[in-house]
Image (cartoon, rainbow, N blue to C red; front, side):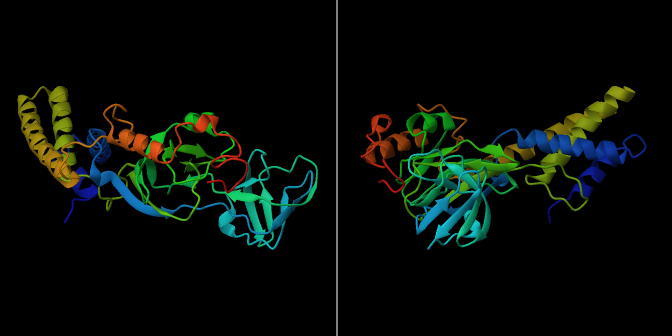
Length: 319
């Protein structure tokens, strides 16, 4: 049975209840918790889930009125899940959809600023995907054919500013926070439904409730927090016995930490250390090499100069 927050701070306070308050013990436990979490990308603080890529929706036609935020569809199948997608009409810049009324009516983030269009083809583009609130960032993302490589949005903006490219994605972007929601892009924009798996880093929050359980070894947290408080007691009182106690707790902490690292490496498989994509130099990053192979396989080497009538260009469904 794992130790809970109350078990941890009680153990720290029990060093000397007359000199360590509950608040001090709780703070020491949380400091130890965050200090250990920051040491390495522990698998225990990772979260893995799956999501399905969304190709463009193009069924039916739409009408747009200058100065109005309403999209009026004919033979369309709009759904609540279309909120957050982007509307593309011709080669215009994409505009985000922020509201759903019924299968023939959506609301744009800003009013349509151009001339009224009575009927036109369109595309609802899933430009961005969201992360759960419990997730801090993406560590790795894999699709049906290969692992995607994390890159900055600036790269995509340079190659494909209007997001006309459609194919199997090669890239996922750094997470951006928009109105409190964590979002990222896949690029090229998927041209079909596929299942993707993402490994994410969980948001680490302080232990607050007595029943809270840390995401890493509670024993290591207890030893480190006890060592810290013993050091403080030595500094406060000058009693050499507290310094000796701190040394003992430090040895317990190091032994537990070594065991944690060995187990973490064992769970990772044959590679004793696995870097996050942002932790490794591209020269030595296997994901970067895989990205290069996929880049060549999809013929994207000359993407910056791709003609509008070529792969992925000149409309919403290219590729």
